[in-house]
Length: 359
Image 1 (cartoon, helix red, strand yellow):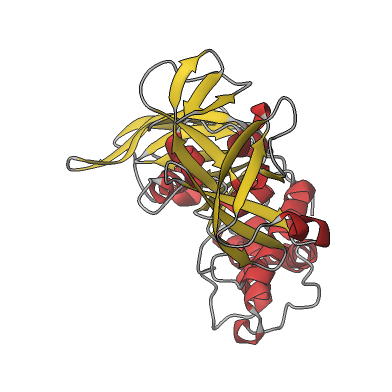
Image 2 (cartoon, one colour; image 1 turned 45 degrees about the vertical axis):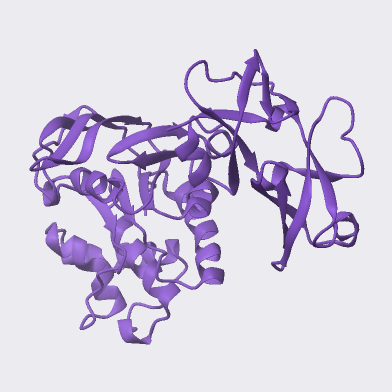
């Protein structure tokens, strides 16, 4: 199968209202050809409405949608040439694997003589060679997901939309499929827009991640920047494992938590309330005061949780706020963890000292 070329996508001031409720609120976003962008947000944030507008299943109340230079705002779904993978896969149980994968070819009236080669190539792309005659009922969850992917890519779409396609899989298979989807994206070169509520999934697979809340895109950035430099308290609390601690601003790059002074290498919000967004893995357990140049926070250990690959420690500060501290589960790290009820000090680098405004 020839390698598909992705298309740029441009969403311009898209809004969708239902009465007085704004499911999508003046959303604009430009996506480059071949880019993998995840739309991430809690239930009710607008991400499903966003995907529906792109797929043509929902018409915007205002705004415009472009694929390349083509305005598809009011084009019906079957004329958009978009591949779609649904949450429940939407496979036909009475058809074989090959018949399911070939269905888009039939719908597009592609000559039947071309079907076998295209089906074989699409199944090879998702590593299901020789599965043409299998029944859907004979497949595992992961295999069904791959059949749905093969069906979405067989007609070489310019854009592929994915609506939480891994949500029904168990944790281990889900994480394995995330890596496979990354590899498949590299092979295809298609533009992919992927909707999920799972932040780890979005960070693992995407070139960029757009975080939605209350019908708006709050922040769009690379996974690393989104995780390490959230723009506000909502993004900070939604991405990663952050604790928000109220701070008093005392000057450029300086804040206080009670009597404890902290220095940040990043800009401090000029107006309104602000929080220290503490990512649990950025904290370093130390003995006594922190090394030169570091910030430090002291408290009492209230709980220690073993979680397999890591250990999570809860540290209560003097102001009553509890921090989460995550340590790798190895011998060296375990020696640093204090027992419940004992005092413990953690260090935080100024580069990791992120102050965000209240949403």
